[in-house]
Image (cartoon, rainbow, N blue to C red; front, side):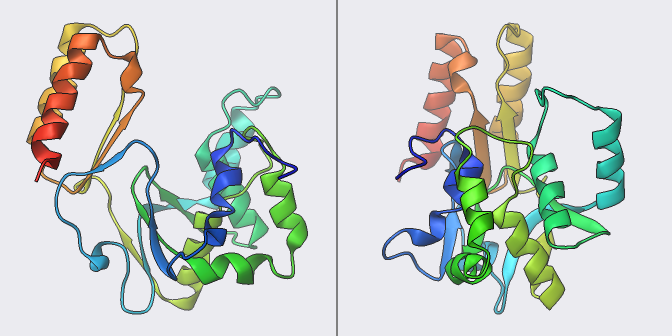
Length: 216
């Protein structure tokens, strides 16, 4: 409890494996995820590994981008930077898996195995109350480890995910374009980020749509 309260998802995610009664295979949902269609275990796990809704991304290229957008205040430090940190931590020089805002199938035992001999890494990550440019991702660690074992299945996320980062101050045409795309979406995962930035009548319309697809 010495690092609480925390406002850092990287720190919180490090401790998911400690949830009492958690299954060895579990699915992690963030707070803005919705399931738009029925799902199966095979949407998240293979017979001997996990599914990553991601795409390979070059470690050297991302390292170059980080240098080009040098930001001493770290105001633009992104999750892609966290993924790059993880690849470097694990000695991966070629590629990492750029995962998107989708539900993630994860493995509970990996958490204990990965940090049993490196308690310092765990302490370093969970001690940051806010996102820090030195942090790494346990999900990326799992993906890289599974890839090294030949048990990672990488799937594209565009057909399975509708992601809407709601923007403040956009006009009605923006909302109608995004809302119409949401209604046409036929995949399984919806992520709606910052719905509070929509106008009240726009939020009501989105909620009514969600009620229609989520009600039994």
